[in-house]
Amino acid sequence: MKNILLIIALVSVSVLNAQAYKGKGDQKFQIGANIQDEATGITVTYDYGLGENISVGISSSYALGIDDRLNIGFGDRFDLKARFNANLGNVINIDENFDFYPGLSLSLKNFGGHLGACYFFSEGFGLFTEATFPLAKYSDDKSDIGYYIHNQFALNIGAAFKF
Image (cartoon, rainbow, N blue to C red; front, side, top):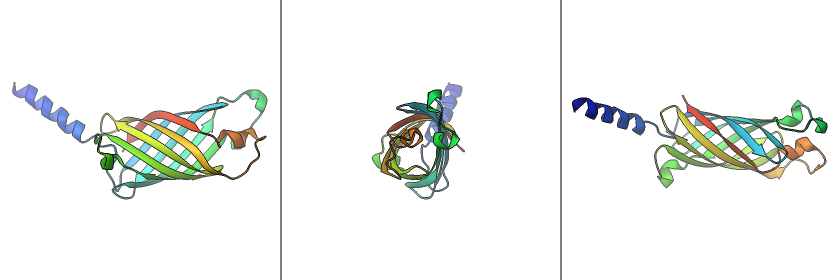
């Protein structure tokens, strides 16, 4: 009986330590699929906690699933963003393993926003989903497919890691 109670206590403590966002110094890396019209690809993000509810980071996406006949190069497939997040998991208080974060990003292609959610199953591993959208585009050249790919609504989904 003592062994069962010890195991329950250890599991409870490990679950309690799996906070989604811990505040200043928190570091999170995410990798996943980028799903959008005319392209699928990969996305990676890194966020660093500056305060109780604020984090900054970088994000990048690369479009893979583009028809070869469109003949676009690396620069048209790639985007890099600086990002700012308002981590509201402890404000809405659903579960300490859950974080909801609206944010803004400044990229090579546009100025945009994102809404994301992350749930951590353990101290270092979780799942995330994020919706990204442009707020201001740098150009209105709709004939350029590279411009179009990074200036539309996109859904990201994947794995999140903390260290």
